[in-house]
Image (tube, rainbow, N blue to C red):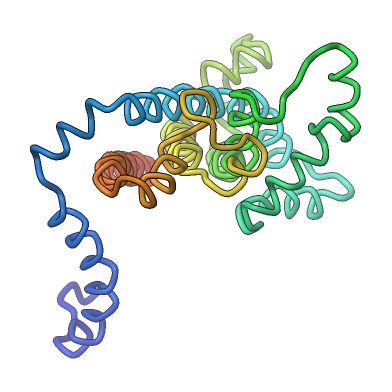
Length: 261
């Protein structure tokens, strides 16, 4: 394999790379340390960071708990309608987030089938922190499920069979053999899911609203700050940029390590 690209290829690739890089440089160039510190001290910034971290972690946990059995089913079993289910699992990744928010509102809103029943119990999900978690989980869970399917499918069956021959139960084999071998892929899926949940905007604003200190996440605060206080928006954008870069770097390292095994 030729490891040195042709100079013409480098020239042809430069415009796309520059287009992706220049806006990020422009964002960093607009930041002023003093103004960033002042903006960080504003309650709106701290509340948005707190809400974002809490809800995105809860959404990621929910995605792992509910998505792991589904990923195992899709990776290790063949059944009628599997391709349809496989496609539906990926659908939230390409579905416009606003459509996802409307769909969730129709289900969990006061006039929805579940919302009406919950209202009879004096429980309200829409426009609450739980709505933020559900919106984030809906759009982010497929990232974990898809990665977990690949991780489980890559584990050699012979190793699991050997563990079974040694007397390990199915649950022991899964915990002690399958999960460790698929670990890098699973962790990569968790990280990508959390990053997607952290950056969710469209479904959240429709299903959960934009209530400061309650449902206002960092993307929603950036949207509001762009109209009221640009420095707040820039500060939160810089925080999310740093988090996103770290997440991508960690995910790629985990996937590279998994590929080397």
